[in-house]
Length: 410
Image 1 (cartoon, one colour):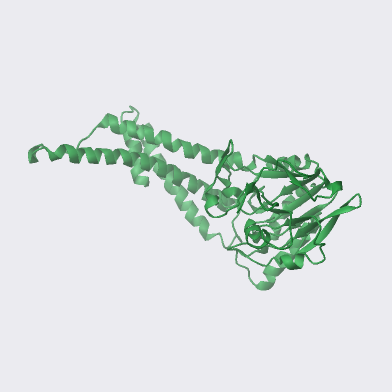
Image 2 (image 1 turned 180 degrees about the vertical axis):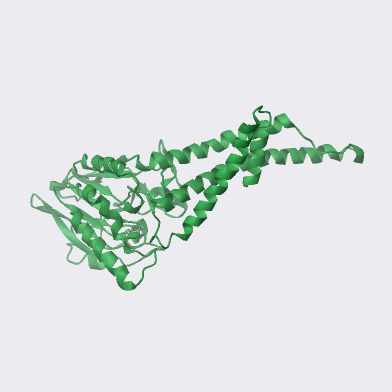
């Protein structure tokens, strides 16, 4: 692929008068591209030693992907031009005698195709650059108002700020992260909830940011759950005891943050003598760790109570909650990140993650049971976001009937 791009760039610069500039464009490209690949491969060797994916690994992966996708676009356009030349050559030579047959060569047309290939390839390159340097910290507030006939009157207008998938081990700009935290604080919601994946793998990843995320306070408390990455399952540990100690340390960090970590349990949120039940489960996901125990988490909950569930993976709602005899009014999840890439414009929404998850972002409902999937505050693996921006969710609960906008699942 690199060699093909090299020849395309040589054609592009063929009429330039400056020989040194030609060499910078062609051989310079080849040197940079091969160097990126070599550094990426060598970086993989330090992955295990580093105890998981660090910002360095994520940047190497992201730059490698940027070059690979850009080259792919370039090659596709260039190969289409060569394919046209090939077909034209066959067609024109069929009618010629042996002595007249030749391979057609159109230098101006081939140069035009090289120029077109560069223009097309510039689109993903620019997009990936924006995603890595700007998009991953371009926080957006998503607001939803949800109506319930049986919401206690005291909670009419009650607001919840939700964050999910912080993935603190990926951050590389503390000041940019603070801007997102300040935006969440500015919502001044009644309740704050965090729905899992505080770290990538290790408890120490959140430590440089504890004083920042501890700023998130709400009058009715701060509550959190664990996500699949919080258990440390994706890296190697020296012993099972070391892995367990890491999880215990992470639980302590939730306490230091001022979050009540809910491990298959529930708590009543009381306002003006009325209450709603907040339920939190450990991770349960289709294809991921499944230790969350919804039955245990709901022990002691009044069957008639208004219930909100914190569950990291949206497949838990689809598999266990949506048709559960115990009516859970609202489930808050995260996990998908919206793939950190996609399109959301004028009601149209697409991301490659839709081919893995039925509900991957925003609000969905069935039989007056609602699920909200947060797009994630942080990022993982690819050090960027494009089209699916980092999210701060603000939900307003309203009593009675209204125009709640949601995707009905049947």
